[in-house]
Amino acid sequence: MATSADLHRRRGAAVARGVSSTISSYVGTASGAVMTDVDGREWIDFSSGIAVTNVGNAAPKVVEAVRAQVERFTHTCFMIAPYESYVAVCEQLAALTPGDFEKRSALFNSGAEAVENAVKIARHATGRQAVVVFDHAYHGRTNLTLAMTAKVMPYKQGFGPFAGEIYRMPMSYPLRDGRGGADAATYAIGLIEKHVGAGNVAAVLIEPIQGEGGFVVPAPGFLPALAQWTKQAGALFIADEIQTGFCRTGAWFASEDEGVVPDLITTAKGIAGGLPLAAVTGRAEIMDAVHPGGLGGTYGGNPIACAAALATIETMRELDLAAAARRIAEIAMPRLQALAAKHPQIGEVRGRGAMLALELVVPGESGPNGPAPDPETTAAVAKAAHESGLLLLTCGTYGNVIRLLPPLVISDTELDRGLTLLERAFEPS
Ligand code: PLZ
Image (cartoon, rainbow, N blue to C red):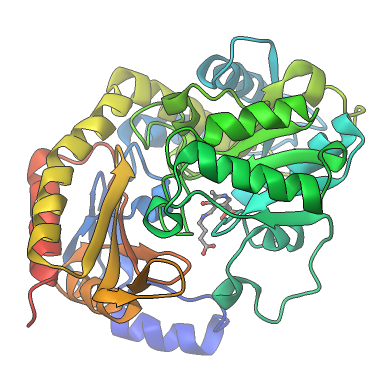
């Protein structure tokens, strides 16, 4: 087999430079929470391919379902010849997402596509155009979703002009805004009313816990207050649960934690155990406002991806992966807090379930808002972790957040090993 070094050389001459990778090792095989590269080296996976393989890599039921589906048929296009698994995934989404009203879903390929379609649906259903998003938000890399994504480097630089009628508001970020949830919501709502106008807002769209932007957990009360204002304004509250959904935060969806019931919810990533699938799910009357033929795409709800999703959801139920995510927090949180007590660069330990983060700061130094971010130490820790065989990701507007996203099926031994490698990565070499 080609080595990582060989593949890296071939890549340089064939793959566009704009597509980059966290590590330079190439994958050979992966199972559960362990990846083996083509050089025979084992890695503990704390990334889940960015919160995708919640059921573990190559989860047995997913593999079996995909194999069986591939043998029956690979593709017809649901818009041409429909099939049962698409309907069954929509039934599952209706049952699993918050809210006990009638719901409908439409299936797509990627998270960005789901977000784009949620905006289309919201505009169509309300007859309004403005979409409110937040500081540090990440919603994708297509043109509309880039307008909604906050961070310029690397996502937006040079790729404009971006779509209009997107308005960015301050996010509740306890470490950096010093506000309680209700106070932060009042502040953001005041700005929406002044800068956009309540009657113009089609949707307020937010990640219940921000992903790429830094695993920012809003102060309690922020989301419920926003959701309530949105309802009064006659706008739609849309939760982007693409990273937080499917048991990641210890519940099926992170909105549940504060009892928030979104009008629409976007999902992707964890939904299909590694196959590309995404969805918009929401109140029947809103979803059905769109005329027949108004939504679709060649591959949306591809039968192989739908088979994988049904097997993924079954696995999550059978293994109670929401409970597994909570258990990961119970084991990891005390270790991370002990690590923070030893290393003053760890300014905050936060997160929920198996979506945990360390925000690194320069001790005693203040930045433009709150403690000065320390992206250099963050990069050094990630690099040390990679060298030791821990697949770890960073994130954050300031590039100073280390995030933990292990598959929810990770064993206690693997979790312990990963945490030990993370602890060691903080020791100066
Ligand atoms: N909404 C909340 O987290 C994808 C993107 C990584 P796609 N996040 C990882 C990168 O650098 O491209 C994401 C997300 C939230 C939307 C998306 C977009 O999902 O499937 O990547 O399009």
